[in-house]
Image (cartoon, rainbow, N blue to C red; front, side, top):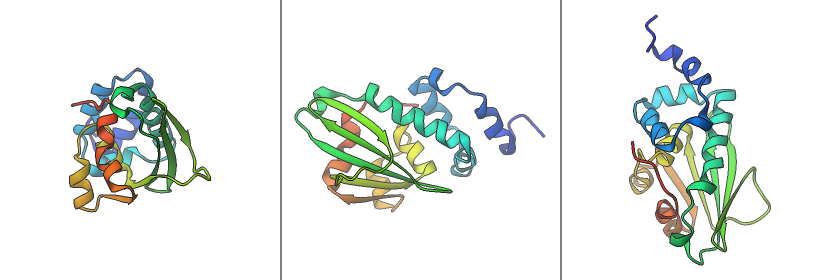
Length: 157
């Protein structure tokens, strides 16, 4: 099989140190993959590693000056083979992230598949378009959800 065959993609990426990949390089990787390829990559242990790295970087990519006095809990439900839940809390100029569902009521909940999530957080998809095409479902404060990208430095591929 050729080196770029889709069947080898997960194997190729499994050896990648995601912590060493810049947000811009991550955006380029995501941009170069089809939805099917992203789905293949987001299986098994690699999915956990990628989501952990993406959510781990949210704190670093948070723009407190843009958030100002905003106080909000955002729940992310990433669907795929199984649903994974993360929560982002913005308050007092800080952003904290936790894996799992808390007892707190989120101000907004975002639900999307693996590929859509990767496209969104890598700057390769427009959240409004995703919402309008039902690739992103929003419960709660739709206004907050539509403006979330302004609170984070989103890479460009």
